[in-house]
Length: 445
Ligand code: GLN
Image (cartoon, rainbow, N blue to C red; front, side, top):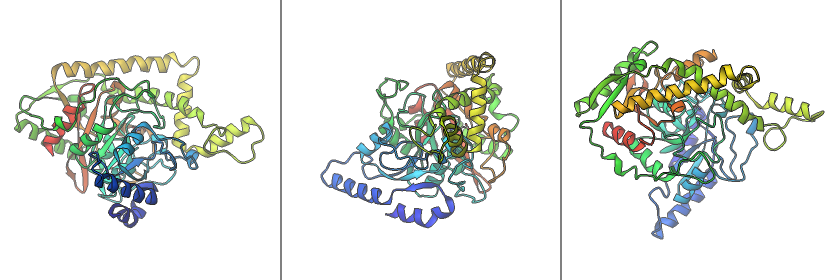
């Protein structure tokens, strides 16, 4: 009730929720009370949460921030939702996002922009901007986000919360609406690494319904929180401290790294030589996968359908013309172009080869150090409307995108303020190194 009241009071301005599940939440909270009274409570029973509106939720609209799915009610729950429900988590509602998770500011949503609770003239970041703003404003104690090229870590940084992008395959993607399937990964956004660890204990693990989820035992992430920083080897990728990084972000991040050093960690410079290729590589691979994934929105099976189609072609054309926003159309055009005959080898195959090199950069780095540290984003949250040009928006993802191409985990933790706007420290680890990332982050909090 306290969270619902706060949503009612503050979210008219913030716009972090697309759908608030008032009745369902109160009903589920009562059920959680009963379960607690019966002595059957699990660790998160009765804990309220916000869910990015990209996870399918049975009986509650899943819009993905798009007019295309404005009327879509999923007949089933995503695996992570099923796991959270079984735990007794109470879903407060579905949070705002860039349409189909394409964006870095939450300004591409059909449901309007979200405001950053720290400064209402700033963006909350994206694409999980609603989840980040809701947690930062106290409209939920924790949230689920997804990260294809930074969408958990960058909004967490912009809103001063903690967000973990797990290793690709650590958390099931079943029922998570696909943007770029080889990059998408769901994960927790919360007020601390400790809360993220509690959520990871519930959502991580193999899923027979997601063939890319990895069969590998899940550690108890809470047990890893008591991490000893003495002897920790930290690498600073020199490419993450170069041109484009704002002075205020750099000084906050360096001050944070100094805290680890003072606690007994060692710091050395590392090079990730293919960093400059990450954005172009991502913007070939992600739109290619997106154009394929988004072909299912044809007006036939579900979602938006244009009125009175003349024939099948007219149905496809007008449904997609009306249902998708500009950024989504731009990516579909890029993707169909790079996948088309004659361009496939030059763009898509080439990008896959470069992806391999980017991944190898990280594998080489983790031969030398335990974790990498740097900024989560080149600037603090920017003003609403600041990046009207898509290319300048794409450049915001400089420090987050390579991580998805490599499949490794990354966490953003609050590391001070630049004026009124938060700065995020990003910590990266080797594949399945979440326990280390959470433990290292926890020492800083
Ligand atoms: N900003 C990136 C994009 O627009 C990443 C988004 C994401 O991680 N979903 O594609």
